[in-house]
Length: 370
Ligand SMILES: [Fe+2]
Image (cartoon, rainbow, N blue to C red; front, side, top):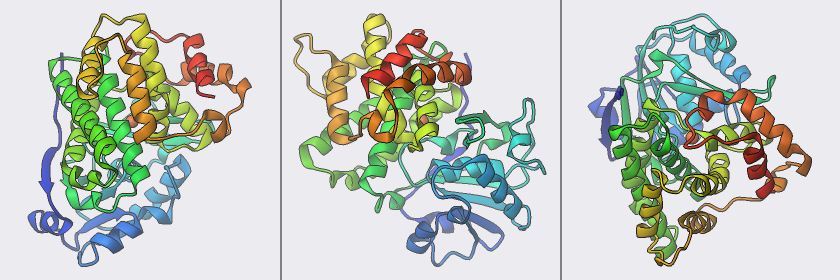
């Protein structure tokens, strides 16, 4: 058993409170989106680099190579990344002490040190990547998203700032929080899970489901009141993710997201119910029974044999609506080919499955959602 919590965690109500506590100065480089800087950081003395100047959407290896070239011309002591998973994942690589491009950095065995301090601040409540050392980029030349863990990718400090959730669009909130739910549910079932990851995962699962039930009962506006609990839950799921990788839902989503340019949280949310229904059918008596119990309790399901994962599917359809796969551009004939590609490229995730997913299982998930 192994469990680590690497970055120090901090919480602040506002960016101003963070900037004062961490003495942000002109020796710092803030890496963020232009809209976030204009909305929350106008008075900051720090240097600024905008993600939007390099990339529109999730990062490709080509875009990150351009970011690396820009950062290598700047002089700073700390890199402070403020944004969603794309910005934080890019920042982990930008802080490395290396002259290599992304292809070189992703080569087997390459583990550079860090050239600057690193502070990661999430502005969505999902990826948890402020506490992980993994960077995931899209490699269009091979048609898939690939992740790599960099030892030096762990930040010195991860900071949760409630204010950044105050203007989050509902769709971004919904899909990012669903990604956190997927992390917690997948890692709870992973063969290498332990008492520590179980604790963080189960707290996150319960908290996010309770939040979703509040949305159903009181409307979408409650997400602002619940910002702190979502930030905490996604961070807890991230702490589990820093120790054990996610599994089959992520594997299936990685390929689909790359093929159809679907944001990560939306892609993982799409495949969560189908994969968990397979798990529940194949091995209902194992640890998945704990998750079934929590769903039954929080959703207040009748104890009449209702399948909790059908109920979760219905809850997600209300709170985090998505489209059918064909509406994203997938064709009926793609299912077998996609399943083969998942098995070829995502073994590092598939080994974390609760029970094995066959090629036919994965093709069946795609087909069911067409
Ligand atoms: Fe994820």
